[in-house]
Length: 545
Image (tube, helix red, strand yellow):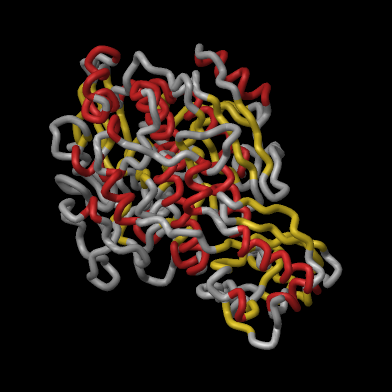
């Protein structure tokens, strides 16, 4: 039996008030809410071993099955029993238990959760948005210390923002006059994606924290595009649903952009959209649901939402990182948008920031370029329309150490403290709204950009790679950096900047290794089959001059 005689804080659970927020009142004590608890693993994953395996040739990689993962690295039934006892003592119900995800979801009143975790939940407001907030740490009985690694959902402030930009005329008439747009298929052709492949046999997971899609919009889009519409399934997480708002400039735009880009690039793949609330608990639960989904079994996850590293608690950063390590162990590739606010990531503290989860070392961080296609030649530069418009995120993490795979990439020191840590992004693709993607959302044709488009673009490419390999290629970062020096695998973008960081030969903190040549990448990842199944095109790519 657990006891409240001695309580300890959950490491990294401290929350601060949002700057400029105000407390309206105490949270309604009778409101019923759900809270996600993360439990320790039976055996922790070895991150160094995952990095080593990620450097192996794709055909030689061995990944754990979901059953093997749960048995080795899932939560212990004994630990679950202790949480059940704790919940019972505090008049909380266990709504869900998942050993593989190391997740238990408890349900109860605000009053009960206040007492159970020694918090004071308040109704707060920030920039016109009301939410349930807390400050300080979450506390648990000392007997559960070490068992509980995170508590999420007591505070339900908005956690992330979508990283898309709709083309407008705000950048001026000259920029508007020079604007062009492409279908995702044209962008894929510019990047020489292997044309004989369509993602058959693969499942792409999309993480969405709001909005929704309308089937008639998707049907119209793919019909006009001339490709068969992929099978699309919506999965509800923590009460999130496919709920189109009718506003293409809001979350609907993000959801539909993701579906239409990924679906156009890999039309034979199944697309599963995980809808969750935009909270730290919802975001985490959507990711772990997708990674551990034994029904749909995604081989690649695309995330177009995020925020500055500093906006996440340490327990969140740790839990998400563990979820991405689990993805690597299971052979699931995770692609994430690097952000649309340049090297500051939209933070106004005078420092440079990178976007999370793109900054996680087990995530393929996707930056943005401006792409102009002329015939069979394409020219790229760093996407930067600031101050009027957006710019690709990129820089040096304040949180994550330099991963092994970047040690030869000549990652520069941070502009903040001159230390070398994880560099963002890893790869890049077209993200400039002025050279953006043609989509159809909420009954309207529109042109969208943002690094949100690059994550599903890379997810679609990964689905094609998996199809050719006959298995999931999984964690790509180490092998991509190994192959970076092979001529033509990446188009090196050397012109432009995103604020404090400038493009240069080789890796840079604007576009990473550059944009991919999909067919040449396939050739080095799956060398035996690639020459037979996916002949290289005659397209050429050049850096902007």
